[in-house]
Length: 218
Image (cartoon, rainbow, N blue to C red; front, side):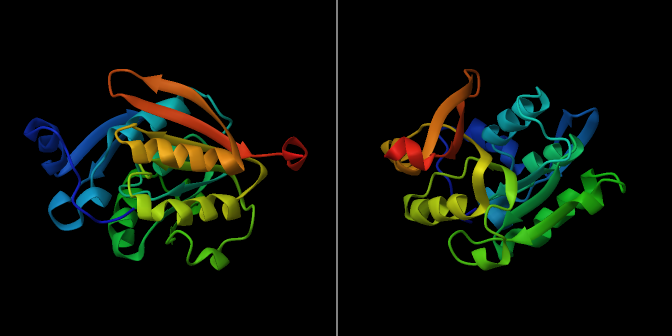
């Protein structure tokens, strides 16, 4: 979501981000994602968490066909694109500065009959929530979006607004620092959270969250 430099432990790890195209195969489609690290930084490259979450969706772990979904901090839009190819009606969001780049990837990778079911829309967490109906989405998706501590409160407010009591939130992330665990602890105060998947090769966890039933808290 935030367009800032990102810590990466090895030069080798950074090389893949400087490639102009990253190619994937999901949902019986070849997806070519344009990357632009030099100009847009973290918002314009495909992170491992997005690949793992896309794979998890393709496994059929959640029902997507006909469901309304939103991707937060979409960056390149890979997760939202995969969700759309798998049958969801998807709103793919990021901050205004990243939207044109995001739109170009979405339009390049979705067949004409799927594009009308997909919307690219501006969303700055905690700010322009009024342009989204409360509880609007069945599924809320986020890949590697919990790395900036100053955004945690706004992100939680956004999750609370966009989801209903029946919505499922799927967050894919690496647990790199204590702040990542701090976010999970904050999330657990408002949502029931469980880990549903772990990819040991990429060291990415997927957490599922749902709003707590008010009766549970009594």
